[in-house]
Length: 328
Image 1 (cartoon, rainbow, N blue to C red):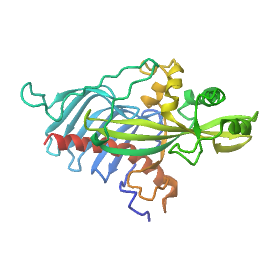
Image 2 (cartoon, helix red, strand yellow):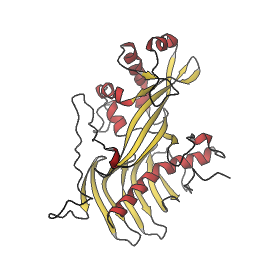
Image 3 (tube, helix red, strand yellow):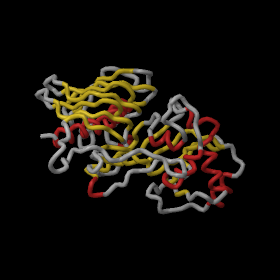
Image 4 (cartoon, rainbow, N blue to C red):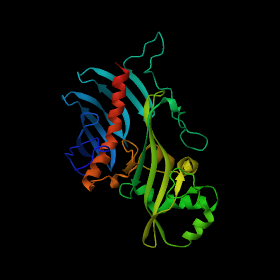
């Protein structure tokens, strides 16, 4: 029997194959008691999303693109009263529709978002300024990206070539694979000599990221902290090094992409808008022993898949709880 400190979310997965195109799922959550119905497309939370209270009343409804809210979103309380309605232009910009913003009196807590998405001179999206005291939560996640449903990231070893070219030109500092806090830099000469002329193939990417709910902007967003290429060298699979993501953003912004998505202009856009398929392998949420999911006592492949899925959904519902709390 699984131990419970980490597994706060018991799930009934009624429809299988998370990575199937347009696959609908129905999941029952315990931590935020509700039933979630959503669609996955190419391994990403993309499509209609709706959740219900245990009494059958609708809790929220909207659409997701790569796990981010888009278009119209509505949140109701358990009695059926509408508590929040927004129209999202993109994951970071929205217009508040309900409750209406008064024209007079003090500025209400739940006001319009002042952030505007724009690019800097390097062609990368400017992050909103974040004050630590305004972050309700800052959850860290580690993810594994495989070639399946991520063809553009693994085509021709292009990302790996960017890293190695930056190393050769001494334009990038990389860090030991055991150091995802980026405090132990590697000697580029030693690393390049070690790799030498060996046949090397990118087989996976590992991301370290942070999900933040910012009370000043009243939005939840992911920010990638680090990226680690996992390669096969002469038939042996190994993690190569960690890269502090802010150090590579400028170069990724220069790597232009032409895909069927007008929001994605560059490789950095792809990561910013999360147009990738991934699986959570570790999180700081309810994980006091800092374990990877695979190392949780009693874990099985089936249970791990369910926990990975639940972790994707719980932040959506925790954010809904914020709207319910702010609009009492």
